[in-house]
Length: 193
Length: 190
Image 1 (cartoon, chains in turn purple, orange):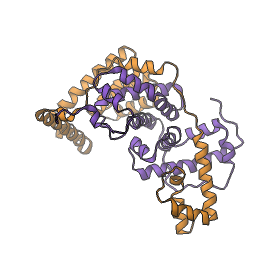
Image 2 (spheres, chains in turn cyan, brown; image 1 turned 135 degrees about the vertical axis):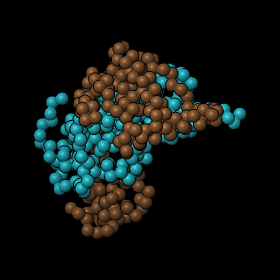
Image 3 (cartoon, rainbow over the protein chains, first blue to last red; image 1 turned 120 degrees about the vertical axis):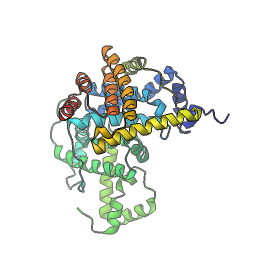
Image 4 (tube, rainbow over the protein chains, first blue to last red; image 1 turned 30 degrees about the vertical axis):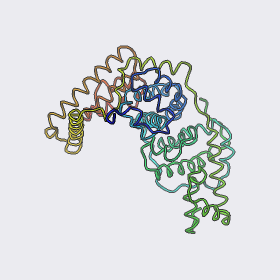
């Protein structure tokens, strides 16, 4: 029957989670539990990188899954489920950061500078983590989605609801900014967590 | 260093896309970089940065995280399936009208800042939905599910385009001091 469209037909055909999402919409909670287990690492990692501490990360990651569950009816499969939950958790994180501090995006041109010490500093994972954590939130989100979650520019654009050109600029500026910060931190001991 | 050459500027704008495997016209880029020592050494820096960032360690969720999420989910209502073709035309029209009224209410409030111009129907639709959300939120709060509570309170606020004391308190309880302060400030401002 033409008028009986299955929920899965609105899902992206190449989304590996299409079947789970369809089952979930039919009220199968176990299907959602599978989605949570499958994507908990991604969602928690983004929350942790954005919030900077474990307590807020767990609250934000849990809130993201709850939002995903309650908003499944609005999910039209224009992107994959994974990209969609990345979008939800990133936006929750950016919202929670917004009120705490407004870190302005850098509009001027940034380059890597002439100090090569950043390469040495980058070897220390804690120093690198601190430098990433100090990035403006929008830049940090783009870097985390690219390097931790291995999303393509197109997927990052969908997750952050930004034009692809802006994503490119964010990533480019974030990397150059990191080189500058890391060069400045070379030889300094990282802060104790 | 600022490149003066047009070709170098073009190549420079493509460094990150190239390193990330997102550049389509690789042939021109590669031939330019092979011929230009300055661009070659700069590209090498971007490659080193990207490689270093690939080493960022993913943070694993704490033990029992998925179970805690599902415990919170079990307190929620079952989501309604998205089935556009099953909607009868009369319901579709009703939903479209309700959505249009809500959007109208939102823009009327935001752009004109004169509540008198918000249609009573739109306010009523938004208000009923917000009341339900607040009831849910209070229920979550009473069960100690703070994350779900502040989420529901915030949704209710967004529907009514306001900042409520409940939301601010829920944020505070959830440890989001900044968000709480922001809501309190909004309340004071209004």
